[in-house]
Length: 464
Image 1 (cartoon, rainbow, N blue to C red):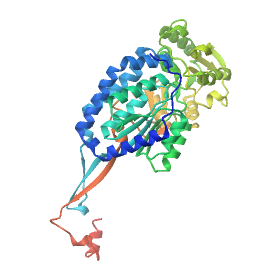
Image 2 (tube, one colour; image 1 turned 120 degrees about the vertical axis):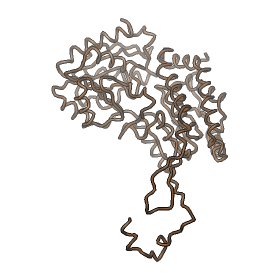
Image 3 (tube, rainbow, N blue to C red; image 1 turned 180 degrees about the vertical axis):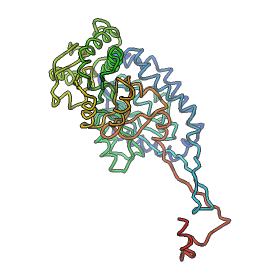
Image 4 (tube, one colour; image 1 turned 90 degrees about the vertical axis):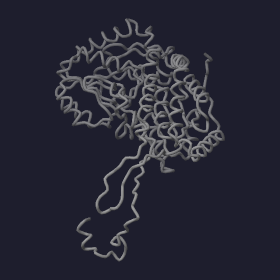
């Protein structure tokens, strides 16, 4: 595969040309045709299969992501989304009848879902295939056009996706725009009918501010510090294994990765032991040599995450190699609450441990911080359900981590600073659709009481 040093910015003139072409194409009404949408979904499905090897190779070069992990966390998720939409999108497009109150008779009521129009989809680098193409599936099934903006931090993946999309779909319908934040600024300065953004809360604010200039609706899939609570009743062996998996998946560069651990004080030592055991079971005694262990995306990310190692006491792990952008899975203890690692999303394989003596302490710890994208609880199910009732998060798992995003039949999204809007499955279709309320009134009867001067008003008032 060709080694690409950097991604070139798409010019401002080219961006404006693509947007103009897409708006014209959308106005033609071609995307309203359900057979057209089906054909485009089938094309994308075939392209994913045809380009699977090249996408996997690019993910290995940019992130050291193994084929197995690339398929499980990227390609297969998009394939599953496409299958779900192909099976159900016709049903989702059908008008929905709604009850009509007696005061509005003779009339019928229904909701029609129409595509919002020209969309902009901006994705991050950590899951560059899944997080760019999964929203695209909803965009296509809803009948929109799209400009896709992949991340410049994974240049090989971005180049392969651009080549795949260009070969598969017409530019006037779906196009890829490349570049850094300058390209993002050019795109955000244009008028779209919806912007779908996945990234950090800081960048989400920039997107929302730009969208406000045109009153453009946004879906913001952000992040934050997702807590994991290990309570007194937890099965420590299982908890440690699942947390170790979730924290080393993509080397912790996952928006729903456990960000910090609130652990019952009686379980801390046992958890550290079981976590270290689980790491070696999954990645071998030398994690750096593991084919399944992803690297930090670049030196800047490495330096930021490695700097957190100074914020506490290393309980296990702690080895780094800047030349390889490698950071060993690490547990930290004795961490001040005002330490940088507790103020910023880690987005790496370091996990702070904070002990508590009563579950109420953990609940209050979570509630005094911004609402997270995910919350995980290990312990008694009934107590876990009480924790979920007392806290707010985008999603949650009881006695597991991350798996709530794997069910395409459930919505995925944040709340508060961790995001707004949902997608996956029908929610993806809805995200790119407008619900239009339609009243159809018969003309064979035309009651006079609705018109001025409102005759029989006293009688009518009783029915309102």
